[in-house]
Each structure stands twice: as C-alpha cells, then as structure tokens.
Length: 251
Image (cartoon, rainbow, N blue to C red; front, side):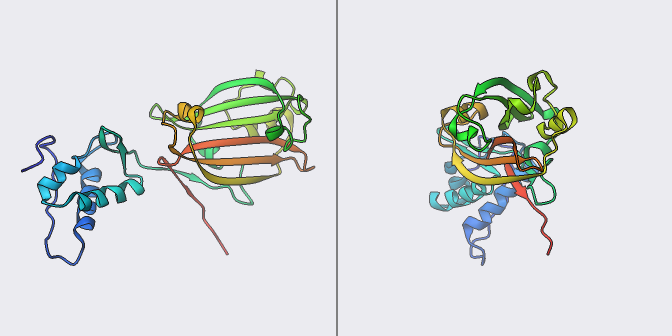
C-alpha cells in the first residue's frame, strides 16, 4: 500500500540485501524527503505508513526517525506525528578574545525585543555574584529572540543600579554590553561563562512555547569591568533543538 495521506511525496526505494542496513537506507531516504520535498512545519508520513510502504518493521522505521530527531531535523509531537524542524541556528561561542557579540548578541537585532524591564531587590543567587547585599536595587532586563515569529531563546540580565542610573530609560534593544559602554563608559573587560543542559520548567517552557521537560541550553555569564568589579549577570536559555554552537580553534 502506498503512502496515501501525502500522495506528492517522492519516497526513494530501498535496496534489500544491500550492505547498508535498512534503517540507515530509510534514514537517507527521509533526509532527502525533508531536504527536497518538505518545508519546516510539514508532517512526514507516519510510522505505520512507512512500514506499509517499505514493508519494514516498526522498530526499523522508528530507528531511522529517531536518528533524524536526534540530529535536529525532525521533531515528534505526542499524539500528532513527526514534523520537519527549521535548520538549527548557528551561534558563535565566546572565546578569550571576543565575547561581547557572541551567542544571543550575535543574532540579528531585528529579531530581539525587550520582553520586560524592572527594578528588583537583590537575592542571593544573583546578588552575591554581583557583589551586592540582599535587598540592594538591581535592574532586571529580559529579552526574547524570535525567528519567523517563533520564540527560540530568551535572556535575563541583572545590572547593579548604582553603576547605571536610569538604565531602564535607555534604548535596550542593542546588546546590553554596548549600551553600558556607550552610555555609561563601563567597558566589559572579561567574563566567566558556563554552558549546561537543563530541562524546561513551567515558566521557561512558557517563555519559549515548549512543554515542561523540553531540553534547553543554559548559558550563564558574569561580566567584569577591568577593575574586576562585576558589571552584569545574565542567563540565556536556548531551545536545544533549534541551535548549535560553533567555535573555530587555533593552536
């Protein structure tokens, strides 16, 4: 039986008895389908349709689809099927010589908007790294990165109020490090950065439009002035299935 739900699909035949395993042949056939026939957001044939079309076991079909999901080409939605993802966005990692416009700040400014801005009291988890006592005032700025209308990352930044009076009255759309340097003459000299994988909780999932448990990449950064006084603490959350980080290394 052919794949009737999507009659325009051109599925490549598999070669029984070839040296390449059937699941890997199917993976290549699906990759061609995704690359040449479908667009992001399109649904691929179901496991049962592929089993019927190719006369394969469900285990074999599932292995091929899972491999493409792991590569970030496809995404399973519980109870709905498997869909084509947009290509992963490439963000340059920070290095010792260049970090101001890496990661989130390397994105097109037109895709970044200020989600919220306010003054809060310092709490231990962000006040201590900034050298502040509890209850000292801190600027809290949250920005969101959207690609084709889809929220793919957001950043929360904390800046001591005593360093940057009236910060919330400034245009905060550009990278915050540039705002601090141009408007307050506070030039970032160095930073400590930690990258880790986490799962979304209710709040972070809501910000990015994903369910709880969805994998995220968390980049935490503490920026210092040349005097080693802390200038900014930020936490940036990326959808793990939408990004890959790249770094060029030299000896």
